[in-house]
Image (cartoon, rainbow, N blue to C red; front, side, top):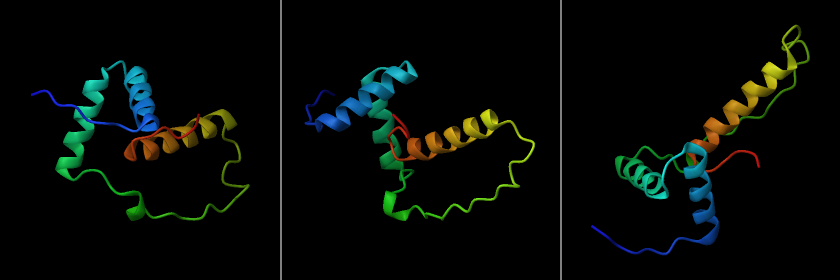
Length: 89
């Protein structure tokens, strides 16, 4: 079935960028998001708990800083993906 909807410019750009990053069509990204929303798998941002970060200089001793940075980036991207946006630009 074909239909027309209006998508806010910012949301459209984010969806188009996500599609390009994943090598998918915009249609695929929109359909996947719609399916997830209908299955109730999308958690509203207000339902996500936020915890303060506590610095511990001893926690990372002996670990390559690049590995730590990559792990942090991965976690941010996973969290952002759950909200349908990219973590860092």
